[in-house]
Image 1: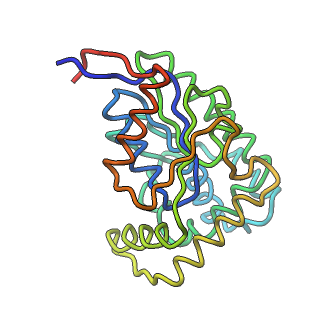
Image 2: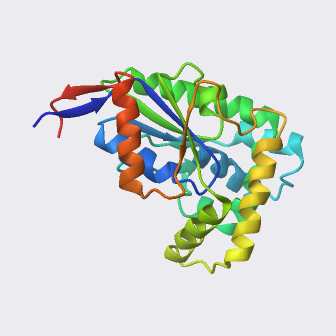
Image 3: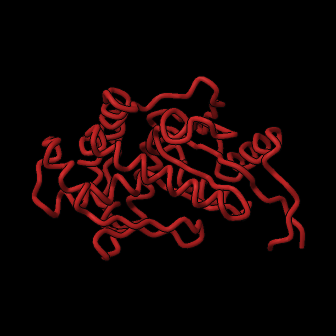
Length: 239
């Protein structure tokens, strides 16, 4: 049965709680494309830093951990996974300890250099296969794949993002306080947008999409329309 398949690179950027991961995976799945969650890579290194007892603010120590940790990540949107040193860390990287430290770890310039190089390699590898790749993070359109055929910057109000984070935490069995979550969302926004290397910002040629009042199907519909307008959807035979 023919269906529209995704070609090229779709770069999805934006702060936490905008729905990037959910829509990126579904867009890739529906379009027969690969999927790369760059945030999971930074979280995995953060988990390694915490396991090693390293201060997330110690840039030199973070760099040492990053260069000596073996990091693997899957690009199948239906079965995403991430591992460090042969051990799966999918649940660990979503815990409160990693969430609280990931922005500080991600701000280390040497770490970003290591991971951006790996992310670019994974994108090239995905494009060697039939189909495209959906890449999500905070610096995809500005630093990782600045020549992506489609760049979309997802945004939403701080309150909406905090509520979404609370819902996700509750579903994962974690206690959630809305006021604390809202404060953490704003803290991460400030850290991510204020770092010296590859700060969170919208690329000049990106399309901004406010998801505050949109549900997942509505966001997906907007993304598919944008991809179609850029000529990134082609009739295929998978499915």
